[in-house]
Length: 276
Image 1 (cartoon, rainbow, N blue to C red):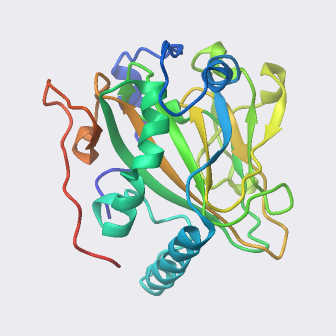
Image 2: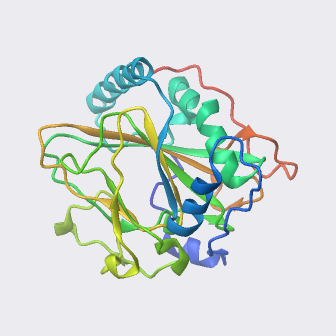
């Protein structure tokens, strides 16, 4: 088991004294995103959809994931257990460091960018599991809150097969109080924020395979159970500004994908040779 749990100890997170407020993007000359998209990220907390991979490219990624999932399940895992995958598998490292994705992120986070996370969230047909309303920042031992998630659609994602959903503008309310999920909720994670709709309009993150969305670590989001006959696989890619500090040794998960980290806080992991 990886030493980097996707559900860190809550007491350790509280003891860090983290800076959990939204820092608006200040970029007068974006290279890839439009000024309108930057304004949307600041006001709504997300940008979607963004094109990255062509049809042939995402088909290749999907075939790779299918083979990886088959092996993980044979070893006792499941469709949600492929986490910190960039530290284990070269092809996932390649996606996390993909230039087209990094350029989008750099327009939001600056010229010095760290990639540190990669986790497949694969809802199988008739999966029955939801992802309750939550903020990524509640799970991440990072400070200040200058971090974002890129969600890559490996399969087409829509309301029928339980695409992700956002509460637009909820990132402006800061870090929110959550409760531990009850086992009867069939939550993939372990946190729930009740009455999330009071913080803004619910928007569904409909993506074609090969497209991505980007959202702030403070934005409320989740997804419903997949009751359809279609799979819904997404790969979450996590990034932060190099000035962010990580607790619980999570800096050891880092890759310098843009610029540098002059402080030396973040590791710069090399590409793993392993494919599966």
